[in-house]
Structures are given as structure tokens and as C-alpha cells.
Amino acid sequence: MDYRLVLTAALGQLGDNAVEKIAALIGHPPHWLSAGTACEFRVDGPQVTEQARVLLRGEKVDVNALPAQGRRKQLLLADMDSTIIGCECLDELADFAGLKHQIAAITERAMSGELEFEPALRERVALLRGTPENVLERAYQERVTINPGARALVRTMAEAGAATTLISGGFSYFTTRVAAEVGFGSEQANELLIADGKLTGEVREPVLGRAAKRDALHRLVREKGITLDDAIAIGDGANDLGMISDAGLGIAYRAKPIVAAAADARLDHSDLEAVLFLQGYRDDEIVRD
Image 1 (spheres, helix red, strand yellow):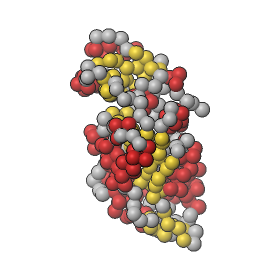
Image 2 (cartoon, rainbow, N blue to C red):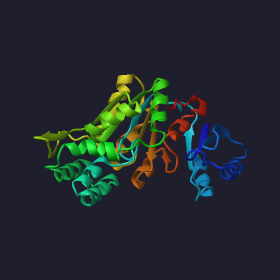
Image 3 (cartoon, rainbow, N blue to C red):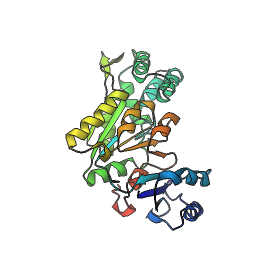
Image 4 (cartoon, rainbow, N blue to C red):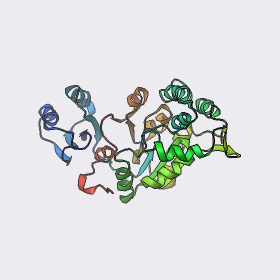
């Protein structure tokens, strides 16, 4: 079967030494997608992936093999916290409330798959009861940063006709703003309940967690009239496992080990533009600000 072994790195960090090692392994030179950032090799299957990763151990290069057929996808479903943005919004809210250590510990266990996501979310939100509503805006303005490559990923896929959805086990206060800033076509998240200018310590039911993310993937595929093979799902935590497992291309982005083990591709060093290179986009096709 015709595959592409794709090497990606942070901007300008894919050096000749790494590429030459893989060229010697494969037996032919690469096709460059972006100078110093991404290239690919034609291979007969994915079996060479682990050998290539071993050869590049210690280098900040991601190695992934994908089928050559049907690489460019028509639906992008992306997690928000620690994927499209560089923080966990709930942990940042907790910091303003003086509870970050306590809440972040629960977050870590939930994202690693040690705790069920839905009850862990309710437990963390309950600890924020009485926190002033204006903390939401402070957290957004002071803590939320868009991860490198996110805008280019979303806007390039949208320009190519793909549907793009931001889906989060976090909160709609943040997803509506991040989706607009990055360029997503739609967003879906949990809603924090507020009364008298303060967080009530509750989230509107039902909680959007692993099952809801998976269900959203299947619904969006039906609505667009495509198949699961035409979809990408990307995330970092255990609540992303359902959509990552079911999508045609499931990507673990700087993810927990349980997610990296289940995904079709893993990105530990590259920025989010690498999702485009995995699909075979060239640098001159990417829509950047």
C-alpha cells in the first residue's frame, strides 16, 4: 500500500542531519513540503515508522506514516485546551481563586485517563463556587494564548472547503472567543452557570465529555455527507480518545501517553501547521495571517 512517511518539526528546525538519516533508511531522497520544517518520503507501509523514530531519538522531529490516498480531509474537529490554546482554562480560573494546585491535580488525572472526565469536571467546578464572574474575562485576557500554527491550520482547511469545529470539555465563554479569533466555523462546549455575578459551582447538564465529543464527530460527518475517513480529530487528553479513535486521522498533540498510544499520528515537537503537512499541503498552499 502506498504510504507517506512525514517528518515535521518546529519552524526551521528540521535539519539536514535528520533528513539524511531517514533518506539512507528509505533509500531515496525526500519530497520537501516546507523548507526546514516538513518533508515526506514515499514508503510501502507504516512499518518503517518506529525504526525512523529510533534513528531520530533525541532530535525534536515528529515522524508519522499515513496512507497516501485520501490524505486531505473535509472535516476538522479540534480540542481547545492545551491543543488550540496553550493552557487549561479551568486551571487558570482556579489560579485566580487561589485553588490552582488543588484543581490542576484533578485536571491532570482526568486528562491522563485516571478519572472519569464528567464527574471530575463537576468536582472542579464546584470548588469555584462564589468566584466572581469577571474572573472569566481576566483569564481570557491574561492567560489564553493561541498555539502556533492554529490559525493557519484552521484557515487553510476552511479555504480548501473543509468544515472546522472547535469542541471542548471546557467552557463556552472561552470557545466562542477562541473560535472567532482562530477562524473556526462552529464551536461546542460546556456552560458555566452564573447567578448574581458569581459562579454557582455548577455546569449546565449534560456535561460535554468523551462520549459527547465522539457523538459530535459522527453528527458532523452525517451533516456534511462524508465518511469518518474524511475527518481529522486532534486533542491531548483522555476525553478526546473517542473522537481520535473514530476519525479517519486521529492526532495526538503534545498529548498524554494514553492518547499518543491510541492516535494515528502524534505531534510532540511540531506546531499545528504540521497537521497540514500530514495531509500533504505544501508551504505555498498555507493561508497565514
